[in-house]
Image (cartoon, rainbow, N blue to C red):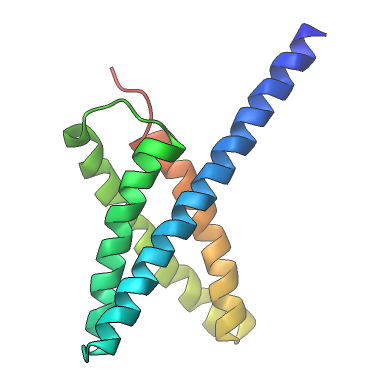
Length: 137
């Protein structure tokens, strides 16, 4: 009985972690899109606006994942370099997966991006959990 309760507790905490991860990522995406929209409304080129919005979203995502999702206790100086590497890896994975799915499998940009986003989300969660926001010695 206690083993079942322990397994249920671990599953519940994993589900809670996953929900916090998705919530934090969703809020960070909102920051990205809000900055992009505002800058476009102010007359900025859309490509530059989305680049600035993405940077703002990445900062918001870091703060939310660090404090809310993973409740990290490690020093920012040790976490930020790993975070930046994972953001770069996610960005590269997004480009590669989208290219492969769109050009060789789905031939539909919306479906290719939807599947790419789902796969990159799982990759990001795994890397954040195992590489970035883990307990450090």
